[in-house]
Image 1 (cartoon, rainbow, N blue to C red):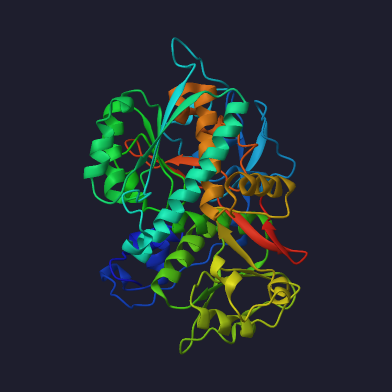
Image 2: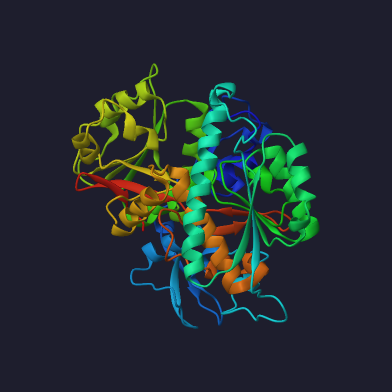
Length: 475
């Protein structure tokens, strides 16, 4: 057990009754210590079945998924042929371990369409963008390397947004775009928030720094304007920020998503957790394992590193059925030992981190042999004609190559402004109904993290090697 764990928290993680843990560990009722090994009863295979949910009038695929803390993709995987439009009285399969927890906004999510009244829809909207352009530093030599990288991110995001504005204008969306240079600290952002045009904006994208973002969040509580966190930030930024959404899922959410994908796609396969012992790797493994147990009722097999190496994992692989190896490590030496230890090929599917794509010891043939998969927030699939067309448009407009942040910002602007166009400033109540057909590389599946907190995007692209090409396998 780990420090600060209790018998109750351990039982909750493995979705079993506290008395079952006590029965399997005589004497544990008197207390447990750090480092103590506990026996965890493994649930019967019979528990890896499904419960039925009968669709009620007005319920949607998205509202049902969210109420069970699942994703629509997970429901589609375990219900072959399931379509977006559900009919009242229809029965759908739900993992046996999933618990019905309707969220505060589930009542709104169950409506088929919003009622637009008064001036809820506008002829013109205001959109504010706050990014670190470092415009007061024209000489790049005066900037630190970190600041140069952040400026490049900002420029790419701005260019991606401009392309989205073109697309939105063509579809009839009319907006004033206000762009501000906001750096670290709160002085600059406070000055921006006092500008007269900020009283007319309907959406704010950014800023990227945590303190500045927190300042805008406080302003949004007073103004009612929705704020988008467009980059990686801890979920704590959403606390007491009911008008904020975060488009970059946390690491925990990403590996929970992987668990849902594996549970649905590879039923009955042997799942092996390659535990390097690294603290960050363990967080990802624990997130995967908790979600996997909740969805299937089954536990996975853990393979611990020996003397800092994962070589020898081949000994625990199944020779008959499929093996799903979960290896969320960014340590290249550890990854190399794991790779060398895996001898099986046709029946082994490796889920690692995106860093593996750039490891020198892995050739294209190796990735294909191991069926390498990894989660990405921005899943760029260059094999899709839509992606190629978008890249060509970006090159033509800006005479440069787009970075991942240009892709992301394009999708952010397109998604949120499409919400404004259809539903008005109250569009967060209808996140599930916003059109995503034109996004290029991202997906949006928001979950409200608390009654008085904001929304986290839970969508993740699962990238895999298909015919020697890397592409999204969960589109």
